[in-house]
Image (tube, rainbow over all chains, first blue to last red; front, top):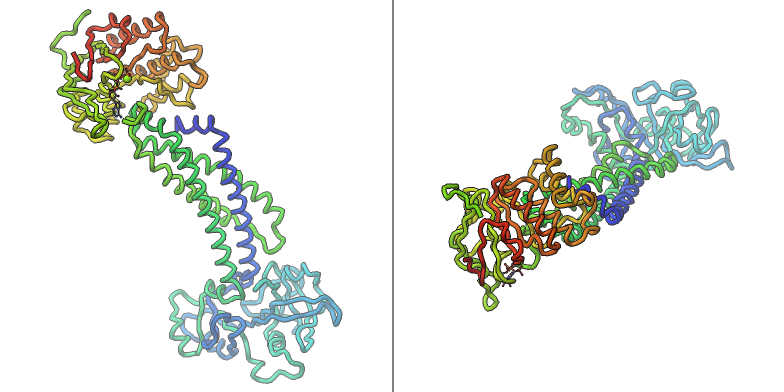
Length: 372
Length: 230
Ligand SMILES: Nc1ncnc2c1ncn2[C@@H]1O[C@H](COP(=O)(O)OP(=O)(O)OP(=O)(O)O)[C@@H](O)[C@H]1O
Ligand SMILES: [Mg+2]
């Protein structure tokens, strides 16, 4: 570190330049990580919050399972009797259009989750009353509250003009970028059926999936076979929600490119730098410095630049991101931001290491000048 | 001139050293069957015209360059049998080298040039720091100790280079044209310092020069001509 730190001080202009590049990439890294977490939140936060380990869908459904799968409440009941199943209840999912109040009111999109009002899926309200009272009562998420919906408001939903009464609120919950509303299952079944008039018997027993709490090691294959379902673990259901896979893989691709570019830029900088100091490297060897000593020195230098630039850039990114935070889809997550910073440093170091490797090829004899 | 007792085991011994440089038509015999033995505490001066092989002799003696033929013993080990990294380690432990061109690090102050050598050898402690300051004083660089090479004159840089080679009191000291950029009085001081350090630390010193006025400080004076030592 003896020489590396003094080089940093004397050539600070050059190092400030590469530091600025890395710092700006770190800022971008924070923003992109906030965007990725935000997109994920607004895509699947409702699924993530479900107190389940697995969901069982209709076996014949594929791809966008939530819009294609239908199961019956009977299937849920039979699941509950299988070995290893701690809890099993029907869960409905339906996207509906609604108006605040009656005709002419503000238009809203709702992702309605239908649950047993007294079951384990029904969320406790943050304010207002639980689902178990009013058969037309619903709990609305913060996303819907932001649209101006309050406890006591009425919503008119779907073609049939089903009337919903807001009885309480829950925290943030959205599904496919649409705010979530929790409704009692019978109400959900009416919304799902969508037509006015009495509910046919078949529609009165429908749900989208069976929400499950399974003991570890439960043989879902055998149960699926018996009951005609397809069980997906919780994380697996994210991929089945609208747009989630495409969004998250796009974000991953963008971030991957960003870090690859950063590693290449850092690598190029240290390549030029190492070539420029060839003579001093030869001189170090001539005064007896082992290759390991010189490599350590040079790597420390790269690490100091990367650490300082990433720390500064991340700090700036957090300030900028803090201003954006809350305005969807943006959410800063400590672990994601840390991961972004660590990746930037590690990949930058890898780039620098490749560049610095050429130190090993320098001959001590070159210290004498000329080309012997 | 006081010759050391012949029973002393030599610290530096070149035997039958031949060095060819360049390729094919351009090939030059820089060193031709050179034999040289230097005992601890002995100060040997080598003169010779430009291009006679003086710098080549030191490069081979310091293990910076492998001879085409012959053996180079430093502190009991034949450098030509060592691997590159072993030669580097041997140089670190036993050899001080004053380069023909001062060869200082651009980002280090005069004082730090000396300290780096100690740091490289893992010997940067209070004693070495004190010795560094003493040597800077001895070469008249105390007032300029905090300056980097771009703010030093050629002669000042040369004196820092000399102090640097002495900082670890090496067993073998190889000195290439130490006075080429110095005035007469300063040249005498510097060679006096080299001679004094040679005696004090029982160093085997080889100084290459074509400045005949400083030869009387040496125990022995040898001449190189077309790569042959006599
Ligand atoms: N890379 C090389 N290829 C071919 N010949 C070389 C090379 N380097 C040096 N020489 C030749 O080797 C001979 C010895 O060079 P050396 O540098 O040892 O001379 P010197 O006595 O130190 O000269 P000076 O007093 O000018 O420093 C010279 O003839 C020089 O031209
Ligand atoms: Mg020379």
